[in-house]
Length: 357
Image 1 (cartoon, rainbow, N blue to C red):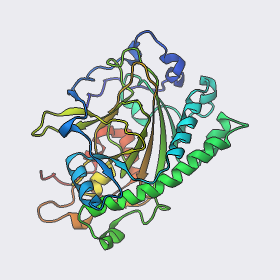
Image 2 (image 1 turned 30 degrees about the vertical axis):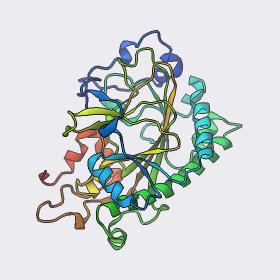
Image 3 (image 1 turned 60 degrees about the vertical axis):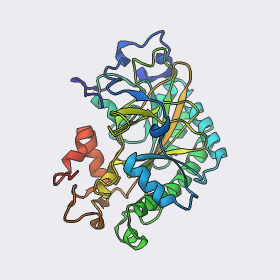
């Protein structure tokens, strides 16, 4: 990933992230990034095609295991989320980001608060602004929605709450399928999984807007990073932008691979806590979002994690003489604090031994 600039952002005015300020004839220096071409970018062709898995496939467990070991990311169909729900959610996201700057700022994140309109948490580690806007929802969206639409907030809340409910169930299903793909039995999962059922899961919804950009090769929508969660389920509209960093292998050098926006699919990213839980069998995936010269891209990230006060460490059955536990147990809340302080060095901070390749 690109190296971190010497002078990170501090107390950046949110007005700089309003759509009206993206209407430039060229990319201003405030949004101009270097090192965007640190690795070659390849189209999703042949061996660089992210696996697409049907969740109704009878060979599902084996396919998930192969995808996680080789890619740390895969796309899913057959997930049961109705296209109509995704269409209604897209409409509400467009409605949200089309609001005036003053209106959106009424729902700005308070200091120390996760939810609301504002910069993504990793923004503080960079000296340049990203070509995007974000809105985070953790818990009920009612409080912020009432500020945005005092007389017409229910349609937004209804769709977001329906989406959250459906995605919790899907996230829980995927979590258990991924644990099965590690070779664990159902009994092992009952004993070791920090999430007993979907009601237990901690989750957050991240709404993202990437306006058209006059010079997309000079800026970035979202800087390269991994996610802190167990899993992230990402829905993107028909505009391409998501890229994942694939390691050097027999087919080529380290490279950025574009993840195409296949209709009615979700992209499933392995996060840092699954990296820990699996004892590095499955690794968190580095990814970023690029921008488009003519089209408006939106995406929705659904982050799945354990209850905030439950510690997550390597599952005992996945440790042994050849590889003991690589990381100490950590709660999601503690790990998020480490991420806010250390960014991409957070995993290193909880390591208790040397990895064995």
